Image 1 (cartoon, rainbow, N blue to C red):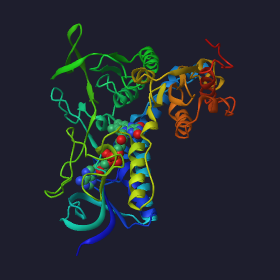
Image 2 (tube, protein in one colour; image 1 turned 45 degrees about the vertical axis):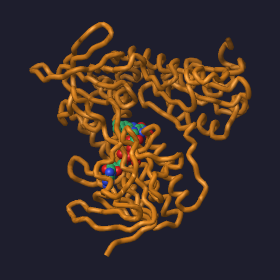
Image 3 (cartoon, rainbow, N blue to C red; image 1 turned 90 degrees about the horizontal axis):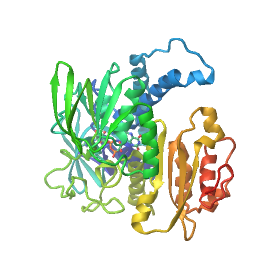
Image 4 (cartoon, rainbow, N blue to C red; image 1 turned 90 degrees about the vertical axis):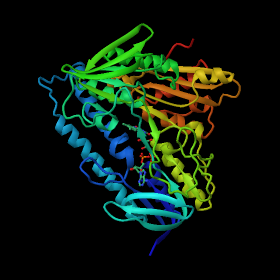
Length: 475
Ligand SMILES: Cc1cc2nc3c(=O)[nH]c(=O)nc-3n(C[C@H](O)[C@H](O)[C@H](O)COP(=O)(O)OP(=O)(O)OC[C@H]3O[C@@H](n4cnc5c(N)ncnc54)[C@H](O)[C@@H]3O)c2cc1C
């Protein structure tokens, strides 16, 4: 006999599991199917984000940053450590422990909210019908009023540098090295490449980042991107821009990557290669022959602004649909869809999605960059404030970087906020909230910020937009 639900979600990453929980909170009988398997064959909810992305990468970034600071910064605090050494196995075990706690937490949340969590493969057969095959079991039919597709994304492989699962790896593999490689080549200088490159650089590897585009972090406000690059170079990260990898080969000395740039062809030899050239939507075996769900030219599930597919009562969210591949964007889409299915009013404000790069210094932004505003012909004013003049940043020994607030020259509304510096990922939340409520630069100026905190840099940058900064010379 088939089971029946109001909502069946396929995929339990941050888009899918959040959708399932919210649907249940809305009184809908919901199930969430997920096929994730870890390297050891164990199953876990949480998708890429919890098992192989956001969480394990941040765990290792923190450990590697502490190790780096113990060597490079503690002495300036007057703390002498004679023999700071590293135990990679323990670092990795800590990371795995955090992942396990969080993924088990999702199973507990499912239980508490009355979501039926199903581990195995899900396939949409047609509107109202989903096939579920438990791991090691045989397929069964589930009937449902609504389907939410949240199948996520997978890393893109380069023909010239095929993965071997050991020395040429994707981002997941790069989180699992058991010792610090001497030389690491990172192909792709985007968010994931920079974060993973940073981990191994801070732990002592020589890291070369090879990026095909001429521009560093093209999607980031270029003043911020340039400032970040300056710091990364000073830390010894070797970033080669406008460089396209054309071939790879294995020899006795390691793996040689050939690449071409404006000056000709070159090669480097490394011990490990991390391929981080982007991710593609993952929809493998997601649809039965009669599903009828349309994909776009790049393989994303086609949806409207409310995440409806072309098939009635079938929705899609997260990395599998257009928009930035970010966990919180997927989660918000999941919430919106679960609310819409329940007949409520809901929307996602795609204009103010925060983005964070967890390097040191961190980079974070929301809204439009100066380059975009110029291109759109919008009249704007800019205020910026350097962390070098912020007391808390000084006390933290992390005074690199700045906050930049861009507001409309006509009505003062905040159009974008861009940060490179300590805790940028936390600081950007204030800007997101301000923009969500259509705040003006003056609203931020008149908001009291605790002293001494990093958030005072946001306050001062807003003041600077009207040449009223109190702790910097207004130009
Ligand atoms: C190294 C790395 C670091 C990252 N760091 C961040 C970060 O700091 N912040 C951030 O916002 N984003 C980060 N991301 C991106 C983030 O992980 C993704 O945006 C997010 O996981 C997308 O969520 P999702 O639910 O759409 O898909 P996923 O998390 O990919 O989950 C999809 C799930 O669906 C399952 N599935 C697929 N097809 C089926 C099927 N037919 N049947 C059953 N199950 C199926 C998959 O097994 C998977 O478990 C990072 C990514 C990587 C790789």
